[in-house]
Amino acid sequence: MSPPPLPNDIIQHVLANLPVKQIYLLRGVNRDWYSIHEHAIKQHLSFSDSKVLVRLGPSSKAKDPKFSIALDCVAFDPETRIFTFKPIANSKPIYCNPRHLRQVKILYSEWIGIDAKIHNGIDVSMNSTNSTSDFGNYNLSPHEIYRYARVKFHHNYVEAVQKYYYLEETPGNGEEISTYLGDYDMILKCHLKDSVVLTEEDISDVEYFDSLSHISSFNVDFLQVRTSWLISGTTTRILPTNFHSKIYSSRYDLLNHILQKDIQKYNLYSPKVMKWILSDYMINDQQTIQLCRYLNETKGDFTIRDKFQWELEAKNIKKQIMWKYSFIARFFCDPENSQDAFEQILDKFVRAEEDEKTKGNV
Image (cartoon, rainbow, N blue to C red; front, side):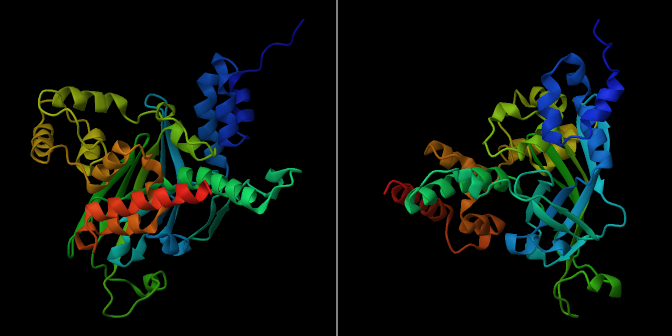
C-alpha cells in the first residue's frame, strides 16, 4: 500500500527552498504542483536573499552601488498571476546627473552572470556558471576556443542585455513626474525629479557634487512581473516570444477592442498606455477618450527605437542583438543631439554585423 500523498502546503514549502528556475521546471509533475508553483515562488522570494535590482545609467555607472535600487517581493496576486516588488526598507533614491536618467537595467539576482553590489548595505551576487570546464577534455585550437567563446558570450550577452530599457519621459527643468516603462511581462513605475536640493546626508550618495551641480533623482514606486520574466534570465538560450506571459492581458484586450476601429498598431509600452493599463478606466471614461485621441494623433506613439527594430527585422537581423554596440545605446539616449542621423546609425550597425560575420567565417 502506497503512502498517502503529501498535503499541498508541505509540497509548496519544500519547493520554496529551491531556486526559482527549479520550481518552475517542477511545475509539470502534476496538476497540484502546477497549481502551487507560483505560490512556492512567492514563498521563495519572501524568505530568500533574492532581489530585483534596478540600475541606472550606462554600464560604467550601473556597476556603482549608488546607482542601484534593490527591490523585495511584497505581493503575489493569484488572479492576475503578477508578482509585485517594491524598494527594500530604508532605501534611498538614486541621485545623479540628468543625462543618466534615460538608461535603466532591471535584473533578478538569480539570473546567470549577475554579480551585483547593491546600495543600502546589501550584497547580492551570482557568478556565471560558465567556466573552462565547458571545454571538457577536447584539444581545441586557439581559433576554435575563440569561436566557442564568442558563441557563449552572445548567448549570455543577448539574454542579459535585452533587460536594458529606456525611459521615454524625463522631467523638464524643475519638474517632478511619475512615469512607466515596460516589456511583454513586466511594468515598472518610477518617480523622477529634476533640480533636487540635497541635504548634507544625501550629498554622500552623489558621485560628484558642488553648489553648481544639477542633480536629478530617480526612485522606484513598484515593479510588477509575471513568472516568465523571472525565469527568462536563468537560461543561456534565447527564449521564443510565446514563452513570455503577457502582463495585464485582459486590459490590453480591452484597449485593443476600443482602438480597433481607429488604430491597428500602437506602442504597447508607451507611458500613457501603461498608465491606462494599470487603471480601472473603461470604454466611455474621459481618460480613455483622451488616450485614443493621443494615439491617433501620434500614429501609435512609436519611438525611434521601435522604428530602428523594424528596420533590423526587415533586414533579417534579430532585434535582440541591437544593444551589442555602444554607439547604439549612445544614440538612443539622446538622438536629437547625435552627430549621426538615424540612417547613418542603421548603416553603421549593419556594416558592423557584416564585418563580424566575415571574421567569424575566416
